[in-house]
Length: 146
Image (cartoon, rainbow, N blue to C red; front, side, top):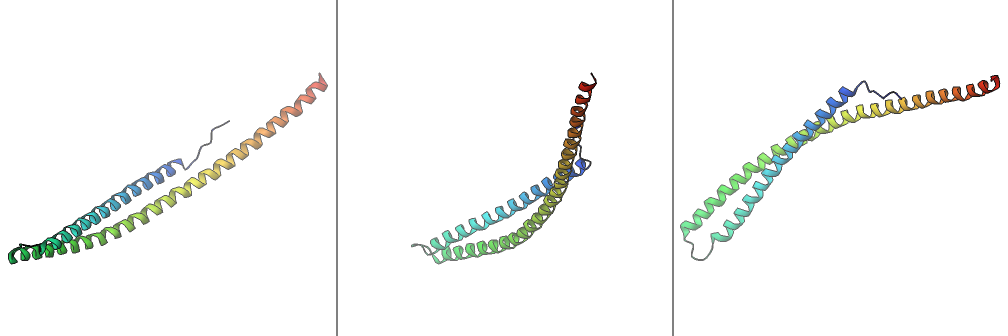
């Protein structure tokens, strides 16, 4: 049996490569967003801790003022991280669209390959059946002659 060859194999490989690259880019974008979210969570925990310690017994007004300034700085950092998170979420969405498109393009070529391979197998089996019928039909003629 002659092996099946797909004329668009290089195109399929290229599309699979693009899909892998898009998947890696999506992973990096999701990782960046996760990192920012962890930083926001850490700042929130630090702020809760500072708020709890601000009015602890024995704190002077100067120390309370320092806690207020620290919490204000944490709020400012959190707001900046929230803006970064919004930008990162947009990048994740864009990377997801690119990945989805690349995946769809690869699947289209893969489907074409499957269809052509199915047609090839069907045609091969039909030709093989004809050849076997010819052999079987010829054997009866050879017996009657001989």
